[in-house]
Length: 355
Image (tube, rainbow, N blue to C red; front, top):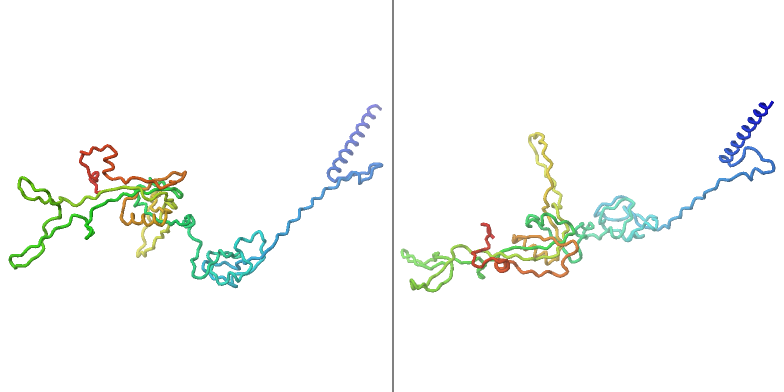
């Protein structure tokens, strides 16, 4: 009898536990109990699911602007056939936009315009004006500056090909001087012609005599005047000087113009070329500098006169606040400032090379 009562209590305990677990599961999933408790309304045990109200999207403030109805090419005339007035959100209307298409009628597209793009007054120019928005190098120039190209082959070493766009460089130029006859504008000495008589036909003509030299003192040994003429032509005198300063490098690399090979007709097909090794990086051949108009004229003179041009790279912290004043360097300057003995024979010709 005792075992029977223990078994009955165990069954009742398991049944109550199952009912409680089912009630907890039902409440957590459905928010309600599966049965009515005595003395307690069902609504008291119901927990409603909170409702999330979405934030209303603000309605954009609309405006009007002229847009392109189709793609417009550079230089194409603007008119009713490619423009129309359309509603545009006010925040998306760019500067220079207009709500009057007649402002743009008759103008020419300054750059390509996409279909649906807002057309501004900056995108159009009157007939006869230059199309395009300008090159990147032109946009890097300050007002009053000009850009000039300098072949790197004309620049000694080009600072080991180190310059990059934005660097500041100074230009040292080396050139030579010679004495000229001011009337003939030719290099001295002049040639001498002597008027002589032809005894055979009794005519007179000019005959070459010598080069114009200088009259020396009488030689006491022979008691006659001595006329000295040069043994060789005039030797040019070399001078080097710092010229253009604070020139900004706009470009340092290869020629900006794309080189497209011109196809040549072939009568017979050639065999396939053999694979070759990949060429290494090429040395820069073009430099573009931003200078003043006067410095551009000076640099053009140096190039045309085939002067030796050397670049010096300036500091990244900035250029010279004031133009530097340097002393022109000649052979006399080297002798006087670097301890070269004055008694040593010297000339501007070094290592057998012409100056």
